[in-house]
Every structure is written in C-alpha cells, then in structure tokens.
Image 1 (cartoon, rainbow, N blue to C red):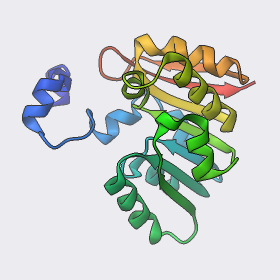
Image 2 (cartoon, rainbow, N blue to C red):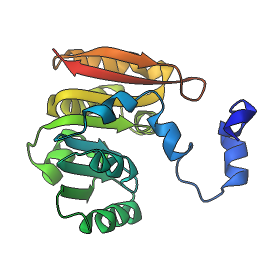
Image 3 (cartoon, helix red, strand yellow):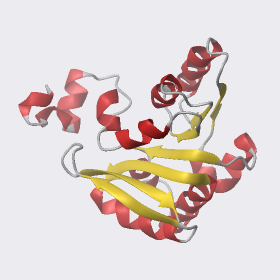
Length: 194
C-alpha cells in the first residue's frame, strides 16, 4: 500500500477499505517525521494529547519513558490504553477521557498542573478546527505548550502549522524541526523550549 504513491490516504478510499477506522493513517505513519523524539524517551515524562488507544505512549514506554499520560474523547480507546499500561508496573500511567473543546480547564481538570518533558499533539488539530474558534484553539495549543518542559511534537496539515508557531511562540517554544516525509499535504514538526 504505501508503495502505491500514498493513493490509499484519500479519505474515500480509506473508508472503503476500513469503514470502521477512526483515524486516517497507520500507526507508523503517525510517527513519520517525529522519530527524533523517541530517541529522547529514556527517563522522560510524556503527555499524548489525542492518544487514541495509547499506541504512541506505549512506544515511548518501550524506549524508557518513566511517565506516560494521555487523553482522548474516545472512551474505548482510553479503556484500551489503561488496559495496556496496567501490566507495566515501572511506568506511571494515566489515561483520561477529555473533551478538548473545554479548553485548558478540561485538561487541567483531568491532569492538574503537571508539566511534561514531551507533549504530543498528533493528528488532532485539524479535527478541532472544525468545532472550536481559532482563538479558543490557539489558547488550548498555548496551554499544551506551557506544559511542555522541553519538546512539543505535532503532525497535521501544512495550513495549520502557522497557528502552532504563533501559539507556541507565546509560551517560549520555537520550531526546531520540520518534516515533509508524511502523507502529502501534511507536516510533522517539533518545537523546543528556548
């Protein structure tokens, strides 16, 4: 499939192939352009915003992360993440159902004021642009950036990276890595605290 010029990434084709799929793209493709972060996992605390079933957090755990937290509106996914991590005693894990349209207050209600070495916002922003005002979404992005002690990782559509840059610059994060290796029209990026 990936060798077929990414034709399969088209929503209509993807829905025909996998009508029950919640997200577009395979797990490995969600990592495309962000693997430098996994090299920084040892001993790190990680917050995966929009974690689905916790697969990305599980990858961080496998590479030595000491704490993995995540949130999503997908209740069955959160239950799966909790199940996976219940058998890993050496990692502090917490996965909560959070409606991000509630903004910073919703995140704080579930996770308090915890800050993380790495915050991930992978494949979420474009969904929120459909249901949040640009101002409310920028406030949420800035809040997530404030929680990032060192890095914030993202992938999404190229047209949304400017909003990320602006919101994260306000809280002291600067983009240090950009990759166009992902599905055409999408970018992956990493911001670092300055």
